[in-house]
Image (cartoon, rainbow, N blue to C red; front, top):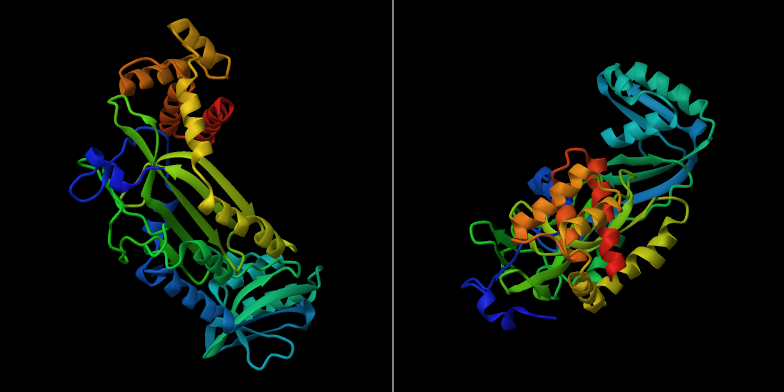
Length: 398
């Protein structure tokens, strides 16, 4: 493994290092989160994030109740709001926009239509649905903070993993997420120089630690310890660093998941550039979700954090060294036998020629060309299919 102190000529005055982002995949998942989060969903450290979601969980309770025993309450003087009277509850539970949609879905009622009705009329429809609900039971998540808020309504077998449980698993490897361990909020790429600077202050605008009333999302990198995996055409090192992001929703808005990868840079708007070896685990909140989280997702984070990059580096080097084409006929035959059309084959070869100054020869050359062409595909399915073929080529070479 290489670190910043040994990069010498590759470092600039800011302590950053030169990267080649024309290679690998571009992934926009983190950028989508970054663009959509208001300030009150952005956190500057893992401890701050954990305190918020943990406190929320401590004010919450969950229970499984007979759906026919729930009473829907609506007041003419407050026609916009509905409340649910749950068995043995001390106060009515007020549905959020999200939980109202979940409740309507469970009783097969159109939520968008019910929201347009006066509360008493919507309440009559919901009451009928609850009384005749074939599944007979529902599970609720209620949070008390001045008044009781109904945050989630799910089926009785919903396997809830709380947001703070995921954050705590990340804290075990990343501490505060701000540089007290090797894992931290990422730096940023300077587009004018293609120099990646890992030393960027964590602010509301740069943070990648997010939580809302529906979910949590975290992205961290090990960008102070870049990894050299071969050389670029100009002889400079091809540098990567490790990263992962993970997500969860304790109210059922999304699955729990962890994605790990190697990447070359993160730009200011949090697009990931030059991504290789992308791996993902996704866990639905089914009956045994908590066990799967404990035995699959959390250990996977620790394994990735502690693992040596040797396998990745050797795989890249093997792909660079494996020459599979020495002339145009070889190149055409190599790509056509792997399912690429005549037009795609020509574009892949032309792309490598333009970016490398020579036609593709090694497996690595073809992989980079395929990924570059995949980026230009407007249809997501077609793009993912090409990226999948590139990944298989790289795995076989390794």
